[in-house]
Amino acid sequence: MYSAVIKDKFNELEAGLYRYGNGFLPMRIFVNEFCGHPFQLELSRELARRGHQVKHVFFADNHSTPKGQTQIRANDPGGLEIEGLHITREFSKLSLLTRRQADIEYGHVVAERVAQFQPDVVISANMPLDAQAILLSATRQNQARFVFWLQDVYSVASRFVLNKRSRLLGWVGGTYFERLEKKLLRESDAIICIAPSFATFLEGWGISGPNVHVIGNWAPLDEVQPRTKQNLWAVEHDVADDFCFVYSGTLGMKHRPELLLELARHLEANKSGKLVVVAGGAGADWLAANSKDIDPAVLKLLPFQPYERVAEVLGSADVLITLLDSEAGSFAVPSKTLSYLCAGRALIVAAPAANEAARVVTRAKAGTVVSPDNHAGLLDAADRYLKNKGLCVESGRNGRAYAERTFAIEAITDSFLSVLAPDSVFAASLDMEREKATVEEIAETTGAL
View 1: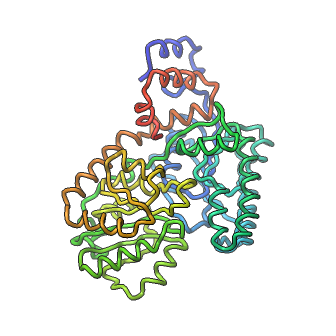
View 2 (view 1 turned 180 degrees about the vertical axis):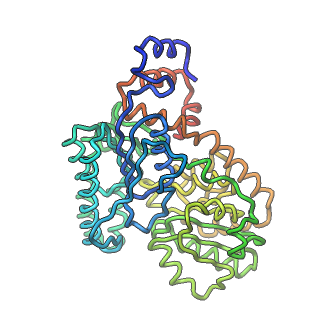
View 3 (view 1 turned 30 degrees about the vertical axis):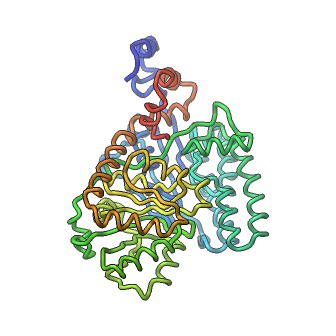
């Protein structure tokens, strides 16, 4: 993989100091990922497989997002520990006061685990900012490096949500969280942005430089593989023989659940297919309350399914759907889209064209992107796939091929290790190799766009 010159540099090191192909002295790596998403768990498993001691924690009491394989498996490396953390108070996303209190308590629980584990480096993703501040302080007390894995621009998202309740509340809350987020980002040893647009956004805040990196999100190729449409899950839920649109994952109000309602009504009126929504969140609750007049055979609303059945759920689809409000496009990238690509199904993405999820699907030629404000465009795209199953197959094949080129965990882990241990010989060699690569090759290798 690396040039002969780089290999020679490794061989010149004293035996036992570094491992070729890994390039690091074993580290103690603490991964805090608030949601328990599958791809972050895959990264922790690969880090442990390479000889590092890894403790991966997530918030077990957050039931509004689906979880990945959070249990230790028989073939997991010995250096891996996974723990779902609990708090004493109730966690509710809908209550501003109790939510903030819960966030702070979770921050203290994570800080305790950091003190116990004594890591060399802490990487934290999807963490509420009040909790992130507590974790960063605990990291400093333990003399470890802190890596801010920027999955959302939290302060912008908070302002978006709070503005729905009150413009005054949005201004006050947004201002508080923006100041806190800027402070935490500046105090971090490194920042990993999931898209170039996030790095550009940070530049507007005066945050840039060599400690800001871009590594795109991905989905586990081995865990989400294409399945036959007539799989057991599809048979159990009576959708194996019908043309199906499927939405799977968190469904908040920023995901525009009203678009799913319109699609369901359209399918019912035309007797042309089914819509399956496997979701949790405020948007899922809204959809259930507003769709009682629709035939349940046309619109099937289901809770999150066990992770080991997700590939079957996605395999039951002819077309998979991603939704994102036009105002949310600057601070959120729906990671469900990446799992959809792995599943090998056509996609409809109702999101701003500049959003990274939309750009991925366009780049992969895996589906159709429409504006979330163009309701007719969404229905037209649905009709186009209903009338052309060959287009469904072609788009799905393109999506899986893109995922296989882009989501290789070995290359992704190389990129993370170059951030987690920037002074290592391996990190230097990786930088030299990248200087010789084209922008396209970098994107394909790291999963960035």
